[in-house]
Amino acid sequence: MQKIAPHLYLISPSSLPRYPYANCLLVEDERSVVIDFGAGSDAFSEIAVKDIQIGLISHFHFDHLHCNVLFPQAEFYAGKEEKDTYVKEEAYLRFHGYDIWEEVMDECQRPLYGQVVPLADNVPVQPGFRPIKLAGVFQDQQVLSCGRRTIRAVHLPGHTAGHYGFYFEPEGILFSGDIDLVPGGPWYNSASGDVGGLLSSIRTIQALDPRIIVPSHRRIQTRNLHRSLNQYKKVVLDREEEIYCFLHRPRRLQDIYQLKLAFPHPANIYEEFWNRMTVRNHLKHLVKIEKVVQIAPDVYGQVV
Image (cartoon, rainbow, N blue to C red):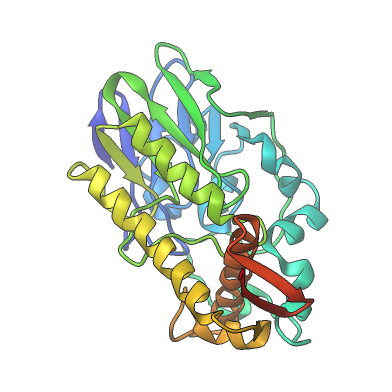
């Protein structure tokens, strides 16, 4: 556990903060708060979990949620855009894009993720839909009070539709969630991912101009934040340009899938699925900004 500011601590996994793990925050106050729950049960053994009264969830992905079961007394809050994913399996599947899995994956049935990527013992539950009772939801720019300290919820869509960051204004600290500034670029590969939303969220962070960024899957960032955000954005724009150039003549969707933009060498069937969802999300954006046209149900080309 690392102190970032008075009464504010980073809870990091014992290994690198990569899937199925993620950095989390502890706020000690009149009502103690944990933000996200993916650090692993061994990391949370350092804190008095019975004293945590509020849990804030950045978004509904498994690597930010699995340790919430360690906090039976906490009230959980999440972004209003994703509230149904915590209580309705249909919404959970739809937000992931799993409801169209067979369409995307050429009629191949979807295996359970836990069967494809086994998890360590410090991950207390398995991936998949799991009902989580929410005490309430928050929305963009809502100020959440936990006593002496307030936390501002900042809607940062793109990674998912209801992805949020949390801003500690006096110290200029932003918990940016999965806008994580990793060199490989953003992940926006589900059905609720959105290219335009992600680009807008990067601009939101730049306008906020935090002094410190605490990302979910990387160490704390304090230097050259604007440059890092621009480099992060450039990965998205380069992928989009690659698709656009590939469409100099009309191409079938199956051919565009071969670009493998997110995972050049997919290690499993899920990474291939996410590659294809990345293509689909970029095509939606290119059509929206009128650079690409859908010529037939599975054929796309540049706007002439």
